Image (cartoon, rainbow, N blue to C red; front, side, top):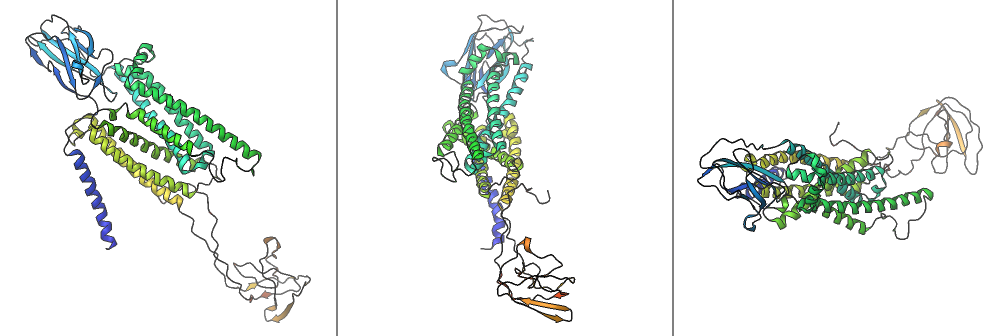
Length: 544
């Protein structure tokens, strides 16, 4: 089959395949939301009742939990008329119920609710109903209070800091353990690994303190409320954050032990550079073995589970499948982004004499490509679960955010392509350089006089020519070391040829004006390969 038509059809086939996948994912599902939404209420919104109800019941799209005053009912005079705690109606986890006072006057009442959805995100809203006939009301329930802003923005910021720390911790560790074990000796990589661990640990502590005010809508001053912190730790999000801290503490101990071992290896090398490696360390093998790699993988999966078990994957459809998919999504992100940062630091921050093997760069290139494929595949599945239809991309807030994220993913994939081109350039070997054979050339020299003695069976004979005396002699083969070559104004008997080492002289015994090169050509030396150059950073685009 011709090559050109095949190249033409390949992009079209890929586009058709992507379109079919999107049609299957979004075609038959109804609109959905990333968080719990209110699906039904009793009394209904803006309804007018003849008699006062005894309770208020809300139903949501997924299971919810309560924190503090999750359900409040306000009279026309802005007085609370709800009584007792908020409970689940009939034991159903996707409902909320609160009892009302015995006798309620006529007028319009406001119901304000704030619950924690199954993915650990707080959601809130309000609606009204009337008894007898509608009336004016002084109750005001803002959609977003100042307290919400003061806690939600820092909480969101430290969530992204935690993601960045996870990417550095996992990506740098995997780059060192799998792609380039010798990179553990580089101080910039060790500092980057420590920075990732510190960022993740510190952000997790802050998130645990902010979790209570974030759920209840209180201000930042409530983050040190011990009673609120105690309630937070017993919730799903609090348990996940606590488990993350435990894993990070264990990882910190492991990193400390590895750093101590590495320091001992460095000290031993400084004391005795030619010493043999320890008996438990085979020659040419890294000082960490398969046990360290297995522990690293387990820690990475455990850290990713602390996100998956407390957020979107833990609620909605296909939870047993969604949780491992979410874990793979996080790990792929961390391996690719963190490993790319590690490679950049190794190239730009390592000492000038550091040589990164081409095999290590090629290994990371394959690993990064696999990570991007996993990232896109798991992202499509998660989008289908959380949005469900193309219409929801424009009609829901989460759908619009997901659209922006899709644009960011396109930019990321473009960066991945440039990254792959870059790493491909780094792995290219320098082309062999050969020394071209030069024809003998006639050399004009000044009149000089040299005196020497012959040795062994070497003989020389000189004759006169119109241009001056000429000489020839038979000498043993062998190049002249640079320190023993005659100066440009004195040419020893034998051949003086451009681009070729002259034979070793035995004596110099007369003067001449010119010399003709007429030796018997020596066998051509095999082409010499240039020594391998250290891998240094080069721009993925020519001319940058």
